[in-house]
Amino acid sequence: MPKLVPPHGSSNLKPLALSPDEALLEKKKSETLTKVICTSREFGDVIMLGIGGFTPLDGFMNRADWQNVCKNMALENGTFWPIPITLSTNDDDINEGQEIAIVYEKTNETIATMVVSEKYTIDKELECKEVFQTTNTDHPGVAIVMAQGKYNIAGKVKVISDGGFPEQYGELYMTPSETRSYFEEKGWSTIAAFQTRNPMHRSHEYLAKIAIEICDGVMIHSTLGELKPGDIPADVRSEAISTLIENYFVKNTVIQSGYPLDMRYAGPREALLHALFRQNYGCSHLIVGRDHAGVGDYYGPFDAHNIFDEIDADLVTKPLKIDWTFWCNKCAGMSSMKTCPHSHEDRLLLSGSKLRHLLSENEEVPENFSRPEVLKILQKYYAGIKDSDKVKVELKGHSAK
Image (cartoon, rainbow, N blue to C red; front, top):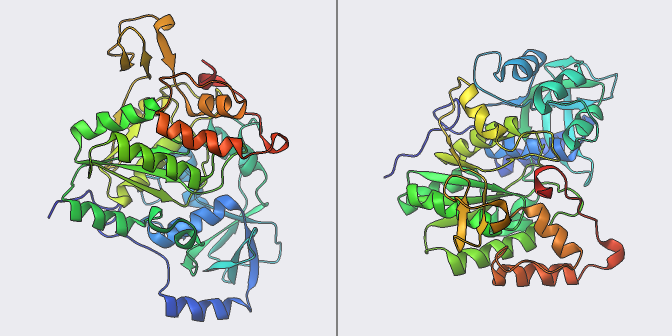
């Protein structure tokens, strides 16, 4: 049996979801508890805690962990962790030692219970400056932190919901224990995760194929959490990626799956978080390309590469750092800054944002931007959107180049 990387900070996965019978009893009990309404980001974090994706955490962070994560990228006990996982509220009456029900704001479903171990206030600007490198509320991650409640509440979480992800996404949605079982069945021990919130264009395909050359397999891992306006829905994205895999990859070298988190757009720090929880999913490597988890021009194109060299952490999953990739007319194929000697005029720079911009504006997509089978699916999706419902895709930062 192949030996997979161990879970982060633990010898075993630590899923916090209760068994179906226990969840029924806990849900009944939760009807009498004070309700704390959680946001989409917090909802995704709860579901991730439930499936063991955030091993070794046992719930939402206390002040000491929050502060140490912000400043030193580690829990108070020294375990590496790059981004705070916290729950907030404006409820003045919640006290330490009180048991609460965590309710998702969009569905009014109780998804977990928690005994409050600590109630504390935070310096939101400090968190934003450390995690996002900016306090500008135009940054979507900063805006979410600044809109949090005035208190954070910490405690061990009992998760009683799967968030509807298995029902909505079927086989696309896989838990860490399920991906680990899949890798073992395939006999894979080295697996590269490819993080995406976009359908895959030629550059993405090229990155995945580079990884296949040096690993046993690749897991194309899509975010299934809340998207930005103008992003392509998960079902369309999944169909496009499945079509690409079927037509352009060797069988049994790639698996497509999804995970329940929202993007935080924390750039370099989020790249570290992506590597950390992919370790829990069983992946030995994370593909890190240009402007990983970035937004606008808040981060340099390869800041997410550099941060892996700047940390001294117990992170087993390693980055596959790949330079800026593009189609080169003179090379007559995909290439990168490290392998192509030609000039900017010979290159077609590819990005998910640029592809969405061209499709939403009904503009012609260059021949070598995307595979024709994939493009056909995306064009059909955009043709079904009324002009009044279309969201203008702004090209900013590195995507505008």
